[in-house]
Length: 344
Image (cartoon, rainbow, N blue to C red; front, top):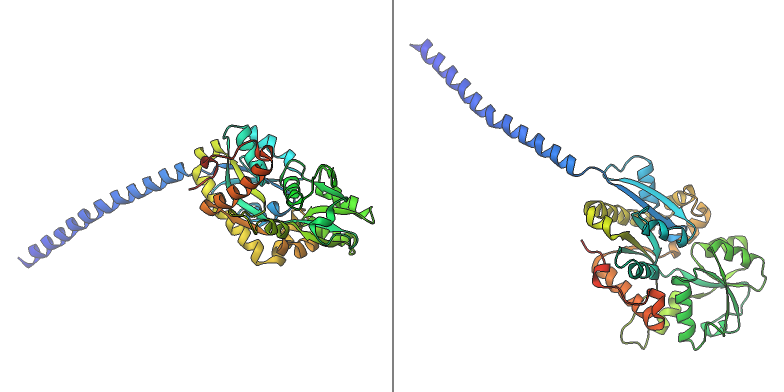
């Protein structure tokens, strides 16, 4: 009898074990199935990105380095660095790029000209424009009257920011100053080096590049400070912005997860660049944006940010309103609709 009871007990335990294993195996199959489905729906997307030589590209260097090291598996990122926005915008409009860093006002022009085919993802650069000179002739904005200024960025943020500040200080940009427009910032640096009495409007890091070539060059005016002075008695205040990140609307709608992944990684890259100047400068030099030496000195003055969501819309819409009031064509003829501003 004891043997029979023992045998029955063993069989009962064995049966229980089988019952217990059945659901676990089924559950395991379901887990594997769910994982495979997730992997299938999260196949890496090709994300083609362009940035301009300067702060917009400098803010991306950590992300670029992570991609080159094979540490980013979520999406297939590729990057290109251009000398001017003219190289970038046709590719974006034609669908050869997905995301691009461009001058702030240009984002609105593209939105209007393409009837909403681009959206702005983030503000990436605050004010980085400066008036520099060989000498001591410019101590205030009013001192620019009658001067010749080397500048680049015609038709974008630099031109309209300078025009706005000149007008707010009682000058006509068309008659009270002479602006010699160059195609690239590096050309302004070269012109300044060849003109002992030269004055130029330059962004960082090109200010530092110019000073490296000629230590006598000094920063005469910070255009962000000059902009802020014009806002003191205004009811609706605005901030001078330089650059934003935009994306094709079609890409945003088709690949929202890729856009979110990019913004998260870009924000982390910006944090790294602002927190570790030495390492960031090495990467900036590595990607030949500017030399490591120049980057190390310039980075703290570049105002690199990653502002998204409601704050991004507040900052950019305020800036565009100022430009619109001064010259509607500077932002493409009209203020963008709310759909222009991306929000997750």
